[in-house]
Image 1 (cartoon, rainbow, N blue to C red):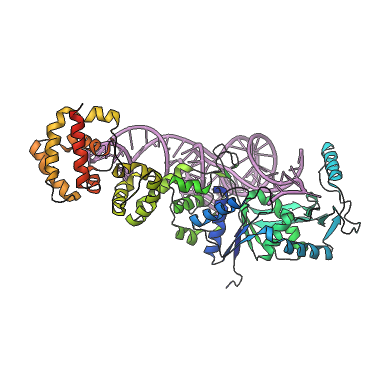
Image 2: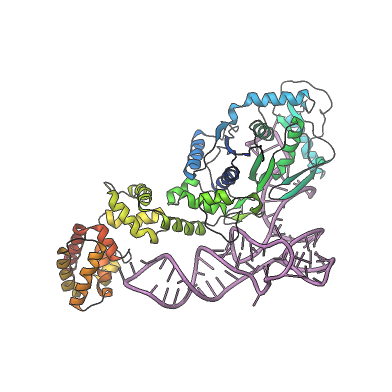
Length: 467
RNA sequence: GGUCCCAUCGUCUAGUGGUCUAGGACGCUGGCCUCUCACGCCAGUAACACGGGUUCGACUCCCGUUGGGACUACCA
């Protein structure tokens, strides 16, 4: 048995909300941890004090909760860990793996510009590397990285990656203002939190060798790395605020179910043969890093919506009612009867791709209707008056308004008039809903209830007469 | 510029040297079903970026080209 528990983490930066790129990274970390009975840690990387906001932090946490990606530890906040970073810096300094550098920013900028102009690599020239300098105002701490050799690691999705150490320079670990640098913070955090698998976007591949060098300098175990390909916008550009970086909560407002979003995020980059639909539980059981693809991809919203409709079809009436209610309220419906909402939802279950669609299409159950102009003209015609009035009479005599009973009434009614259902279905539908499309007429009559059906049919009859 | 990563239908992908005249899903088109709209069912559409190798045999392995992307900061 493996006695080391797997620990993964998700470290969002609250400089924005949680979008699908971040959500997928979170999901893969979560799945990997859950699949292996490991631990999942949430860490907020809020060291960018100017761009980080409290409200973004709240949105991120809210999104995680909505998705059901629960964490076992955290949230930790990087902004509260400066003491720990200092300890590690001291350790590096005392072991000679880091040194103070007194070069000014201006000097560095100038040298970089010169190197670039000459077509050379713009890396730090190591001026202070062996000067044995002490701390001083404006000094930074740099890592003493190896000048030769190669740094190699086996990425769990990309395979072996190696880079010559000569490509890397002595990166700054601590800034002149005393704050810690990103690469150092990540390593210290991951290391001190016991993270042994780092699953993140492949935009971090080039940071990995630098971080490995820090792990080595710290003499700490190096975690496993898995770099996920990026998610692209419809224009094949990496996701940004501009287009595809839709906040996860926007999908919630669209009426997407969390399990559908999770499913579709999982299938972007990961696969399990030809299987397309996975419950969250199945995702946990079947997920593995080996089946994560290497190529970046575009998030397919059409497919998400299709998946969502399939999840809606599987919901039971009670959950359907619970889920639909907030959408109806947002559309101005109040004093909703739970039973009616449930009944309405069931009639629309197979016809709705999102909860928002369902809410919109079920409005006729809860609010007054207006006739669609063209439908009114085409179907609510004077020649139908006698038929509709007789139908009204028959319906008024109905003992109960169940679908079964209604069908019986209609069989007799159609027989009596020697007509097909087709003849009155549309006029009746428009009388009851105002529109040319709806669930089956018996279904809607049952949910609407006798009183409402009688009222709407009478209204339609007088409307026709007044034409 | 340098380094690193990537490349199968429009999109997401299966495929780990022969079972591929390349499979599934979404989308789209046509048909069936039918009280409308859907659901469902059936059918069709459409891809291995290019060029060299290796091999009896390459979508699968190697090299190159092209095209994307990332990193190259006292941003994260």
